[in-house]
Image 1: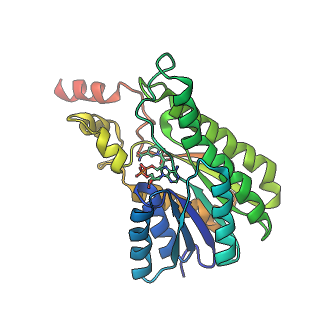
Image 2 (image 1 turned 45 degrees about the horizontal axis):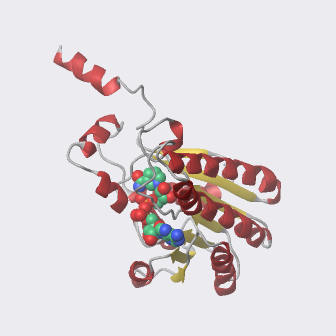
Amino acid sequence: MGQLEGKVAVVTGAASGIGKATAALMAAEGARVLAADINEQELAGVVSAINAAGAEASACHVDITDEAQVATMIHAAVTRYGRLDILHSNAHTGQDDDINVVSNSRDVWDRVLAGTLYGVVYGCKYGVPAMLATGGGSIINMSSNAYLGGDVVRVAYAAAKSAVNAVTQYTATAFGKQGIRCNAIAPGVLVTPPVLKLFRPGVQEIIAEHVLAPRMGEPEDGARLAVFLASDAASFINGQIISCDGGLNAHLGAVPELLRLMTSA
Ligand SMILES: NC(=O)c1ccc[n+]([C@@H]2O[C@H](COP(=O)([O-])OP(=O)(O)OC[C@H]3O[C@@H](n4cnc5c(N)ncnc54)[C@H](O)[C@@H]3O)[C@@H](O)[C@H]2O)c1
């Protein structure tokens, strides 16, 4: 018996990376999964692979920046599968011109907030009532460890993820007594297509040095945490922002340099 047997899940951003791994693992754990993405071609392949493995999933085209489309996606899950127990708001649209507070135009801020924050907001807005109709459910928003400290790029992304954390805690607070759990996953670096694009020579080695594990993070690390948060095993976990970073942000910044000095002495 799978951890999510009998449950219905919606996963956004299911055509790639963490969302793809999560849709597959949730289905393998017994959930009926509405896999949603803006990229219909890639999504079709993901759904076919899940079905070929004997699990239940179907595809839903969605642009998470469009409130009406998110409402339609939630409605599609309930119409197709009869209920909604799990919503993983994972999709986001990256913006290459999101740099710092001086260089970012208002247009950059608007695009980043739409692609990173508003999809999560719309998910909660339409997901909560759908879940309340059958006594509650689990919402898992996708945050990022970017909120933990400053970086030289992606100020709007980090601000939007901080807002995702606030929306997560406020949703848990407003609806927890009615059976809604709302948590967020904050990945450090999980190797997915957009992360691979950032790996110029040397970058991966620097990150690997700071990860407190003998390997890099993978999309499946995020998927396993999402399945746990979706499952009844997490029934007393609510309003939490949970890192999935292999300890990347759990140590003092200078530790790798200090270790090098100590071992070379
Ligand atoms: N991979 C990491 O290391 C990492 C780190 C921190 C946070 N995250 C977060 O994890 C989530 C997934 O990241 P990933 O690395 O798997 O990315 P990815 O690019 O591999 O997957 C993102 C998916 O979202 C879809 N998408 C983009 N815009 C959309 C829209 N408007 N509507 C619907 N779907 C849309 C894309 O088509 C794609 O399939 C994101 O929220 C990201 O911010 C990832």
